Image (cartoon, rainbow, N blue to C red; front, side, top):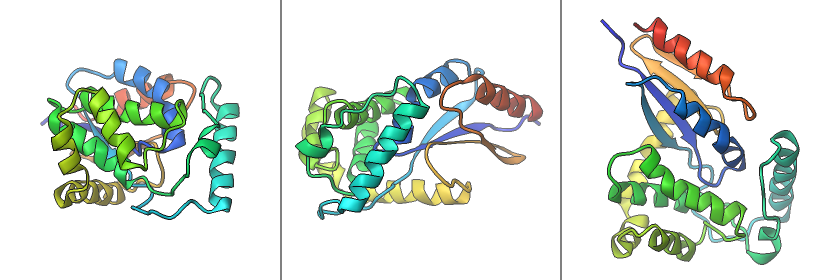
Length: 214
């Protein structure tokens, strides 16, 4: 009996390493075998908060951005974010925005990715704060979503419940950080090692798991 295979992509739309991984992740998806289901799971890095980000946290994240620029050539960050915005350690709103957008778009995967990309570009290139509801609503409008529906669902309990379910599944899969790739079939789960600069090893690992399950 052939195993039912799923490749889980675990991410947070405000995770800087996920932003760095985007080009290689796109290349990985282009090489996946037909019939392999890809499912996005939201990480929920930081819960809702109206408190300004502490200075030490700002410094830590700014160092991450600089490290990524060095380790993943070509990754761009607009460092004006730190002077133009009031950062908050709060990614749940952006995660719920992805869910609210997913509800309006047919299917999953690349359709869902439209909001993820919009959030990443707003945050990392345009120095806008996706922790702010107003920014997320502006992004929904730019994607031609039903803004009234999006606004109603953004902070709805059912939307948070979906995010909670994603986070619980992340724990069950043994995910330790973001981004993450986990291959799952009837034999169990296999964590795929992330490479931020080359898709080949990841694709080879996924293909090996796919063949082993047949």
